[in-house]
Length: 352
Image 1 (cartoon, rainbow, N blue to C red):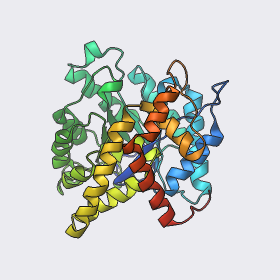
Image 2: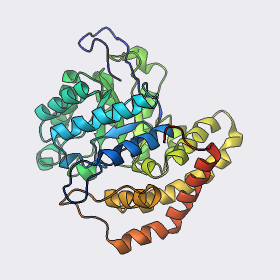
Image 3: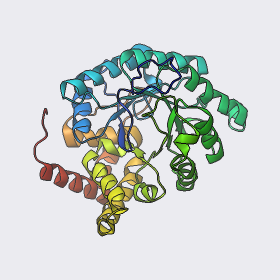
Image 4: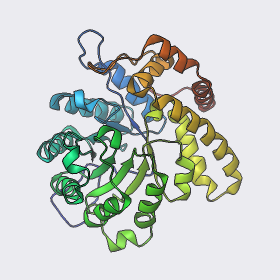
């Protein structure tokens, strides 16, 4: 969503607007000994997910952003932009995490992300001082307000208590931020709270929201995205907008299909049964694979595509026995079988 005239408050357009759908928080791949960025693996994975219709989210939790330097984050954005453009996907947006310990550094990351080619930033509040911040609505509101005001690109809220020392924004605060901050363009709810999603969407998906609360960029509405896909179908009926989900790394075609069926079933009820079937497979797999965290996802990518590798220390790799158990788990097998069937039905991917 790189903006033209980002300092202009007159509701200009954006180059690559975010749309409802599925987004993948892309892992960062490392060479085994040096732990330098493995850009070859990164490029392959960006292309694989993008060709399935899934835009990338970089430098978030799945990306091990806390382990990445400023230069590395910028390198990943530039590399992803090159891959997408070379594949003819020059209109596909890139979201980049700008989380850091201080508001000041988050804004620095936002400026660097914009310079590197990111279209949107996503910001999480650091949990280092969660004891002082978690119950302080004024401080939390000021955090996202200031970042959205000073960022040269649109900003999303990232609500993930597990990565923020337990800081968990309620629906009232998120809705207030959406109403009052025209450069905020969405929220990722990795709290897994369907009720929260429903309450926020009841405001921002109302037909009058944009007219009553114009956004800074006219093609940048406020999206309410889940952080998991175990409630993608219920979320669609609550007027949510999809998900940013680690499972999209393993099964991008499946999640795109589920999203399309979920949305389509609101128009054609005959699609609901198949949407429910896929939602059951996805929900079970999401719960199983999420327990293995980043290392488990990388293990599955190794098995499926021949790349993945280890996390960056001190984050430990998955134990071999646990990895094998994850691979052989019936929930994983059902998802993998579904994904491979959809890939086969769609034919060989281009540009791979």
